[in-house]
Length: 306
Image 1 (cartoon, one colour):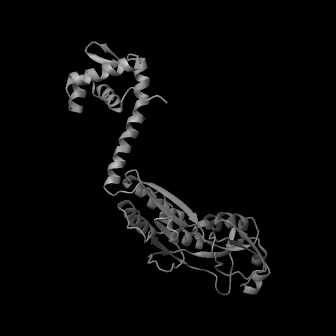
Image 2 (image 1 turned 60 degrees about the vertical axis):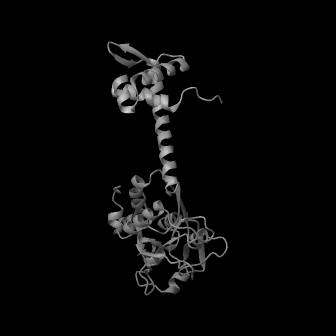
Image 3 (image 1 turned 90 degrees about the vertical axis):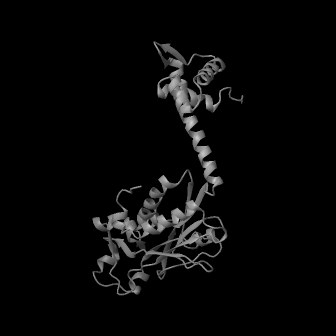
């Protein structure tokens, strides 16, 4: 690929001439002499081989080719400015990327609000979000592949910030055999039915969590898949309330009336990679995750405000 003949500074100069109404005005904005601005634009036209401006009375206006080229140059100049700004922030210790791994059972609404609030403060810092289940989060944290982790597990050697608990409910389709019994259910009742469980995404020591007493058990890869199965009449499962709120409200799913052990409230924790200090962007995200975790879920599901 041939090296460009026209520099970013030349495109900036042309933009200033057009945006500010002439060579004198552009020179004032750019803190340069008018002759320098005029020479820069003239040199551009010579290098490109097409006229960019024409004189209309006392005003320089774009030619048809100039309009097209100027329009195409604006994103290029903006991206170059953003790149320079990002390099400055990195020099000051600002991270280029924050890696976040989250247990799939954590409410997406709270996460979304925190990330939406982070965006205008990010200074170009990217977020790399990863979802895991149970020990999958722990493994990613222990191998150092993330900066922050949200997990319901107590991870040895790490001090986590305590977050809110998430409510899990035992549910089945409203016409499921268990609901037809029309009485409180025992564990013996559950043992005869199909239970849908979520596969732990950890590779080294996957964990089985919760009641797993059913003779028939189907294991799926995500909470969303489990919710779809159960809403279709296939088995029962413990699912987070925030994931199935609509199905409960519409009556598609009903809570199983267990004699004991019906509702679970696992608490979540926010962990940081202890092998590296928190950078300024990561610290801002920690504060936002903590703040929005305390927002009631019905409010969190409203449109996020940056």
